Length: 273
Image 1 (spheres, rainbow, N blue to C red):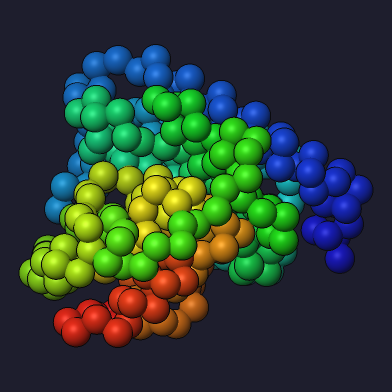
Image 2: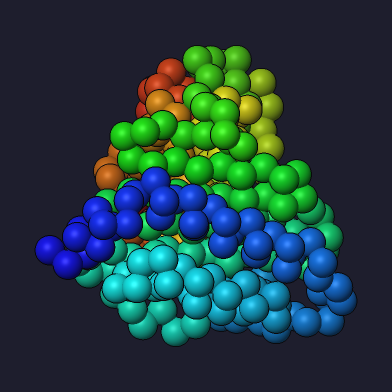
């Protein structure tokens, strides 16, 4: 197959290194941004914003990533989302995950790039330029932070932190989300809301938190992070336990094995698709 032949010829490690280098350069665009509050426009949905920097980062990613894997499909958050996942390679990209944080200079945003083959994640790269933390994973080869291996923690829910997202574009999920937050707050050490699902998944992968959930996310929010969690020894799925989909959005539940299992035993847990 032409896709496989191209990657085999180039070398998967070289592809990963080149993606990391491109993502690192995008971090500079974020770090040196100015007048972010003046560059904002709204998209469909509640509190759904885009800035000129989201567009600039995605444009750069599309140009540079398709030089690395020329025949890949490119699926990014900004744009018409017209590309289908299909067969072969596909880049699934969030140019700035945590756009509201970025606008408010909250300094909790990242660049997220996943590379899938036939709908299965093969490479995931997530970079937080504010902390200079580069997370990356390759299927079957583990997960890493700045070159050092990372692994999920071994703590159960009662000894763990829960991070969560509020699915802010979907007002109908507000009550369900916060009802579950109350349940998980009572069952855990505490809860955290950061505003970046991709970085929350990195926190699961690196053992900083034990469980993450969000009632509705888009594929670019979790594509790269899903591989990081899996390669760090964790579990990730829809909130009903079914496999994630990369072609359409869904709920997301991620954690280490003890906390993930504790979730499904918890009275008041939800099983969303």
